[in-house]
Length: 175
Figure 1 (cartoon, one colour):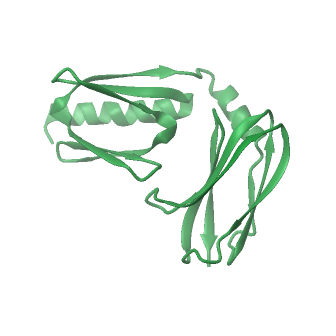
Figure 2: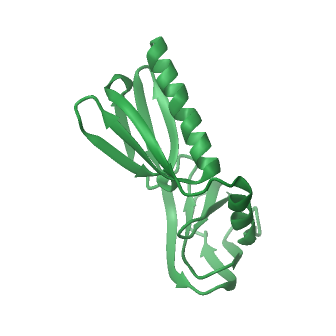
């Protein structure tokens, strides 16, 4: 990868990390041909580089690839600037998954500090969705939801619970 492409790649990775910690809402790529595309960072699982190609992996399993030379510039919009506020919001959910490891049923306990949309998903280590349950809008309170993993192959997974502004993950082992 050329020096300019390496610098662009390094900047994108640092931006993604910064945005993750600051809970930035969107990252927008503007291309040399005048087109642009925008992604909600909550949907971005990872960004990798293969020579001059940037690969953007989303939690839904989608992968987008571009030649780094075609990216003219990028920008993002922040919704949080206070990291402590972000940590307090995430910790307020008090997510617990048990038993872990499990061989069949996974209990997911969480506290919803205020009314929110709730989606719980199980993803393989590549981010591919294995099981997703949309619980819709829930009022504030303590909840216990159950995922049946009986028919899921043994392995390591990521349990992800998300609301409108928060995403919390826990590693889950199925054996």
